[in-house]
Length: 498
View 1 (tube, one colour):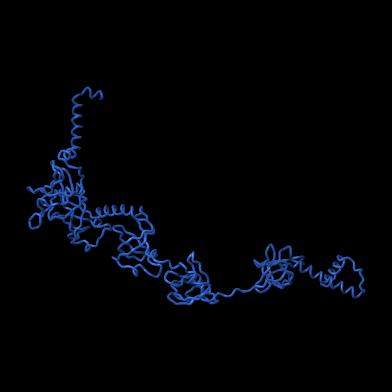
View 2 (cartoon, rainbow, N blue to C red):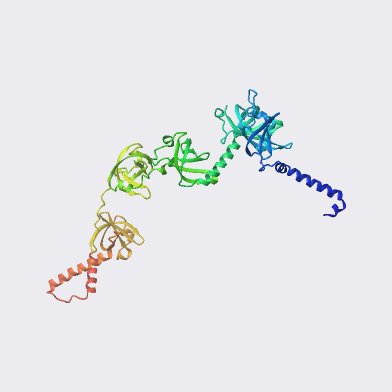
């Protein structure tokens, strides 16, 4: 205790009295309930079932269990003809509001009784209890709603989850509403149906989170059909069936497959609870048309199909619902070059096509308007054969030479041999060139040529011819000199002749 409080004992007593008073005020309701034997403490808005004990004055007394009773305004049970709709012994449902003047107040307005007092409406607002209201007419910014005999206002944005402005959907109908505002002693009462719907939706989502899982088959009701897909209701939670998941047949649109209000069975393929998004599929329940497609469409086989889409690179042909193949643009022109498939075909055209290839794993089938050409047999030249050709390209590492039948070979720089003059001028593209084959790779078809080897071969042939000539003129004399001397003389002879 502080020195100030020791010096002022009266202040200490006043503080103590204040604390006791506050505590007594906070625990008043709890002490009252215990004193009359209530089994459990009621919370504002809590729903109870109770029997009518008696009707006295403007109150209906109900039994809350044990020695506890509560009261409901008699006006909540009055009919339009002035009679009362309940009597002693009837069981009713009511919602706890608060304790006022030592009496537990409850209300049954959510059940839509004929008359409601402003006091009861205020109690419902304070306790968060829903009330039953009837949408009477559309006014500026929303709807006029009557709760019993009290006129209230519900904005467009609060009439449903989507802020509906279609008055015809709501006029004359009764719904539960939550009282958002109660001002000016009841002259300004604002209601919300959306607040209750959001609460119900949240409760349903929490329940569904415990039961739904990817791969589960569920029953849903078609709520809305759009070009991109169909929205379905799974008991208060929306799910989307994308257009691509309607059917294996890509030509089938959502509007062709379903109607609003129809019940469908679909498989859950994705759950995103943080975004309240459920994605479902109808085609997941159908057999996969690509299963065993290799057995139905064999390479080089001929089949009929329908052109469904044109693209700059080719056309897509539907072979059966859910199975499409591609004719590449290079296989459309029957040998002539075309710039776009529309030059030769059109969507909706039936065609006979040939199967070039089937890739079941990647769901691809290659097609052609013409049968596959037989592979051309290429005969590679033998090593040592002298070939005639023309220069194709001169590269830093050698010369590419076309030698006929679509073949080409490479003369490496090391195999060009001696040249007189500028090699780029001598071996310009298109110039004739004779070489000899020195190597052939059978697997890759690469051919290695040599000009140098051909020159050496010619020298040896000329030498042999010269030897034969000498033998014939000198009677077989062996005094021919060294091979080097003979070659040197022969080359000198050729040079002088040139």
